[in-house]
Image (cartoon, rainbow, N blue to C red; front, side, top):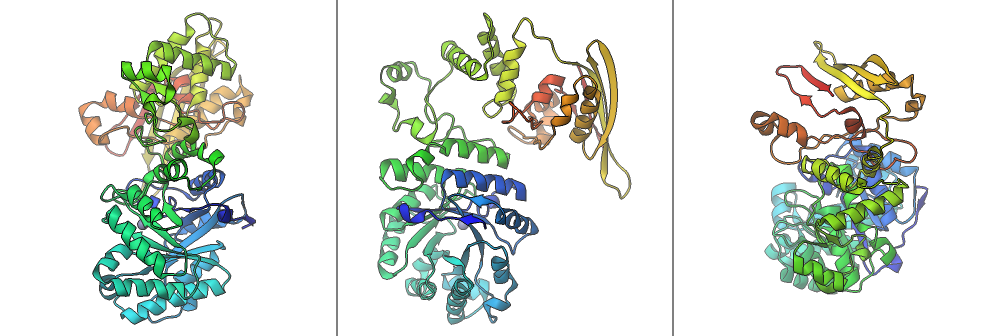
Amino acid sequence: MKQNISHGSANAIHVYDTTLRDGTQREGLSLSAVDKIRVARLLDALGVEFVELGWPGSNPKDAEAFARARDLPWSTSTIAAFGATRRGGTSPEDDPQVRALIDTGAPVCTVFGKSSTLHVREVLRVSPEENLRMIGETVEYLRQSGRRVIYDAEHFFDGYRDDPEYAVETLRAAAAAQPEAIVLCDSNGGSLPWEVEQVVRTVAAALDRPVGIHAHDDTGCGVANSLAAIRAGATHLQGTINGYGERCGNANLCSILPTLELKMGLRCLGSAALAELTHVARQVAEIANLAPDAHAPYVGRSAFAHKGGIHVAAIRRHPRAYEHVDPVLVGNRTRVVVSELSGRGNVLAKAEEFEVALEEGAPAAVLRGVKELEARGYAFEAAEASIALLMRRQSTSYAPPFELVDYKVLVGRRQREEAVSDAAIKIRVRGEVVHAAAEGNGPVSALDAALRKALSGAYPEVAGIRLEDYKVRIIDGDARGHFRKSPRAHRQRLRRRALDHRGSFAERPRSIVDRACGWNRVRPFGGQRVGLRGRK
Ligand SMILES: [Zn+2]
């Protein structure tokens, strides 16, 4: 890595994010190598000390992510690679999985080992003594190879419950090889806060290495267990953004970090960085293609939203009357739900920001438009360019740059060949009807190419716009169920993400193309053919 500066020593708590490894174990969450780098960049900007990028031995995608990370400058984060201790009966240098950790070039290697006799005997099928050697030798080998090493004691709390002496012995085996931290994992997420606090206190006193916590949320105590461990002396904290993770998730850093900083007076990121937390939580949800939890503590859209009349009146008099912390500290804001007046205020503020002069009556019309579209499943929070377009359309002098007449797309697949799509589009631009047709590797890419072709004569600047990514998100329920019950309602729930504009609308112009073209009809056909048809 070019610059891997660890700013850890200035912080009381060393924050280790595992969203990109443990977090991706969540059902329905999958990140490409490029997505992983985007998340890692956000974490770097947030001031997270360690970013675990993946498990290089487990899949080629992670190897690609490490290769991409190698050439990027990192300002606060150090990249970590995750893997297991060596296999039984071999040496670390002969274990390809351990070698793969070194090959990533990541300056930090995090290895997990077994703490419970049950796992050692039944899962690893090695002797308890061999397990101790596997731990010590792997940590030692990685350190000798010039890596910083963090040791994760998997299933530690369960192992400690069954056989405390052996569980602590595994930690001593790791400690003898001097890892940077020894992390106690509640891998099954079944431990309770007072138990975690007591065990961490005992272990921290028995070891001469810094102790960490890695909690899961299977009893809804992932956050509480992490806080309890830190109260008991843990100084290294592992968790994920938005609590993503297998089963019920990992401990949610978006809840733990503000609590540590604002309520327990412990420095994790630094106050300026904490104000980026809401933005990071929502961007990570966006990249993961998951709807952000509106009711998440600190970072949820509703975390500081006030609806009740009495609350609203009190908040107006004294903002902190119904808020436990100042939302600005975590990058969130107080919201009044949704009186016509406060909504209009938002629209006016946005118009100023976009430098759009709104005419009489336009703010209310924009607000109505937003409400109507949000009720149909659109989300404007991360699509400010779409808001700007809604505003511009309110002007009496607004002339649409083009009009969609109709389009169709056919998706097919010839035997043993890749799927192909053909799109044909008809638009009216400057009084002339233009037809264009194009092929793509899917319906959206075919439509994108056809629309671009149709527009290129009148607007050569479309050459500078490219379709970088789009995602289809089912807002609720089962897709097929909706199709069966209410195809129209389902279609309205599909959100599409469209163009990556260069220039002023670079942020996230979800639905620019939809809205511009009126692509509001997605029609599934039976068999192998799926069509998209629209008519304005
Ligand atoms: Zn875990």
